[in-house]
Image (cartoon, rainbow, N blue to C red; front, side, top):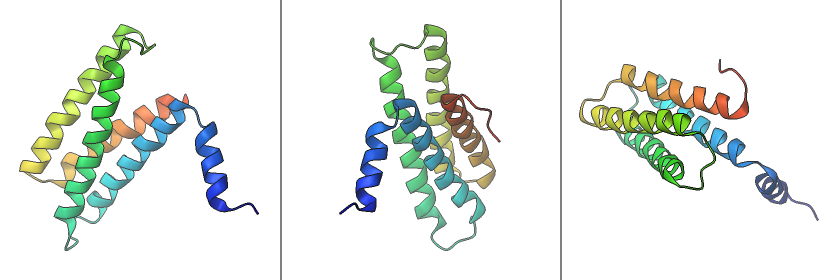
Length: 124
């Protein structure tokens, strides 16, 4: 008997690394967008910190991969993405210290644009 979980596993097994990364970036952008759209919610601070931690962890993983000698990207692309990772880290600490929904926009936009680039398509 075929189950939905079997289909999801098959999809995960066949997705490219680029697609997995794109989906992870979009997921993080969605979490941040939710916080931005629900800024007045009672538990927004908890949700915000969770979304920021998730995004920061994702970018830490991407940064580690970019620093790997096995990474096939050109050095210029690696340098640009590493600079973005550093910017995201700084912006995350800034938002944690002085929360503002307006500050989330750049993190959301970066994630969406990089995800679109990984898929080879323009972002919205």
